[in-house]
Amino acid sequence: MDPLSLALFVAGIAMLIVGAEGLVRGAGHLAIAMGVSPLVVGLTVVAFGTSSPELAVSISSSLGGKPDLAIGNVVGSNIFNILVILGVSALAAPLIVHQQLVRFEVPLMIAVSFLVLMFALDGSIQRYEGALLFAGVVAYTWWAVRKSRSESREVEDEYEAEIGRRPVTPRTVTLDIILVAAGLGLLVLGSEWFTAGAIDIAEALGVSELVIGLTIVAAGTSMPELATSVVAAIRGERDIAVGNAVGSNLFNLMAVLGAAAAVSPGGIPVADSAARFDLPVMTAVAVAALPIFFTGYVITRANGALFLGLYAAYALYLFLDASGHDALDTYSMVMLGVILPVIAAVTLALALRYYLRERRRQNAGA
Image 1 (cartoon, rainbow, N blue to C red):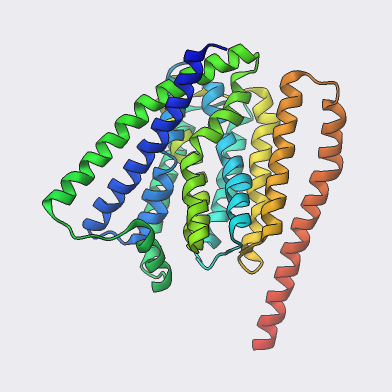
Image 2 (cartoon, rainbow, N blue to C red):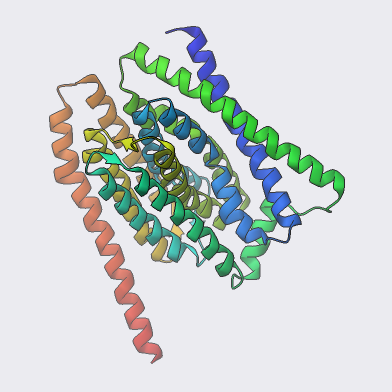
C-alpha cells in the first residue's frame, strides 16, 4: 500500500473532524447571536454540521465519477450512526430520552429511508428525486424551528449548555465567521484528500469502492457524530446524544444524498448490491430503532450491546462478500433466516407491548 495514500487518508480524516468542529461552533454561536434558540441550533446546526463531512465527500465523489463511494458513504454512515454511535453512547451511559421531537424524527427517518430505497430500485437516484429529497430537509428545518417554540425549558437549557452562550461583540462575531470559513475550507480540502486516499486503498486491497464507502469512509466521516454523542451521553446531555444521531441520518438522506444526486448529470447510479442488500439493511436498522425510542424512551446498555453486535455482523457480511469467502452463503442464510427474523419478532413484540400498555393506561384514566 502506498504510504502517501495512507497519509492522505489519515490527514483527510483529521481535516474533516477539525473542519466540522469549527463549522458547528462558529455557526452555532452566530445563530444564537441572531436570536435563534439553542434547541433549533442543536437540532439543525449541530446535527447537520457534524454531517458536513458526509456532504463534502459525497458531492466530491459524485462529481468525480465515483457514485459507489457517494452512495456507500451515506448508507454506511446511517447504519454506523444508529448501531455504533447510539450503541457506544448507551454503553457509556444509558440514554433516557425525554425529547418529544424524537417521536416525529424517528418515524420521519424511517419514512425517508423507505423513500430512498424506492428511488434506488430502478438502479439510480435521478436529479429530480435528489431535488425532492433536498426540499425535504428545508421543510424539516422549518418544522423544527416552529416546534422548538413548544419545547420544555429543560431541553432548551441542555442544548444551550452544549453549544454555549457568550456575549455578542464585533470581535466574537468576527471570530465565529472566521471559524465557519476555516471549517468549510478544511472540509473541502479534507474531503478531496480523504476520497483520494480511500480510492487508492480500495484499489490496493482489491476491495470495491462501495465496500470502502460503506465501512472505512462511513466510519471516518461519522467521527464528528461519534465524538459529539458519546461526550454528550457522558455529560448526561441525553437529548443531544440521540438527537444528533437521528438528525444526522435525516441530513445524510435528504441533504447529502439529495444534493449529490441533484448536482450530478444523470443522477447517481446505484449498484445492484446496494439496492438489494445495503439500502434494505439501512432501512431495517431505522425501523429497529423505533420501539426502543417509544418504549419508555430508554436506550439501555443491553440495547447498546445489541446494536454493536448487529454492526459487527453487518461488517462481517461485507468482509465475506468482498473476499468471496465460501462461508458467505451459509452466513447469509443464518442472518436472513434466523437472526434478522428473531430481531424483527422482538421489535414487534416490544412495539405491541408498549401499545397495549398505553391503551390500558388510557382506559384507566378515562
